[in-house]
Every structure is written in C-alpha cells, then in structure tokens.
Length: 82
Image 1 (cartoon, rainbow, N blue to C red):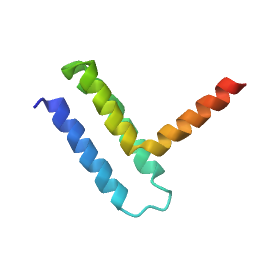
Image 2: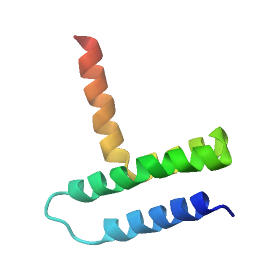
Image 3: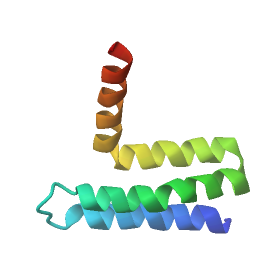
C-alpha cells in the first residue's frame, strides 16, 4: 500500500474521531480543518495512484463531509440561477 493511501485512511479515521466528539459550532471548524488537509491529500493520492484512486478518495471524503458538499451545491445553484 502506498504512503498516500495510508495517509488517506488515517484522514478517514481522524474524520470519524472528530465526528464523535461534542462541538458547539456544529463541527464547522473541524470540517474546515479536514478540508484543508484533505484537498492536498486528494491531489497526492491522485498523483501517486492515478485518477480512479483519486475519484475513490474524493467519494470517501465527500461522504464524510457531506454537509459542506450540500451547502456548496446549494450555493452553486443560487449562483447559476442569477
């Protein structure tokens, strides 16, 4: 297993651990932290293992951070409707 895949799996474990801890801001600070780490990690996975592994890592990250993805989709719909 390559280093990038191991790091992506550790990112998934970290995301799950952060999700079970209580939060006063509905987990948004943690989501920003995970996105800041996840985007370069996604590029590293794609670069080292190819586009299919990158798409798989993107799907895993999007499933963990689904609310930021939902809000992004709503924002894009509003911007395109103007």
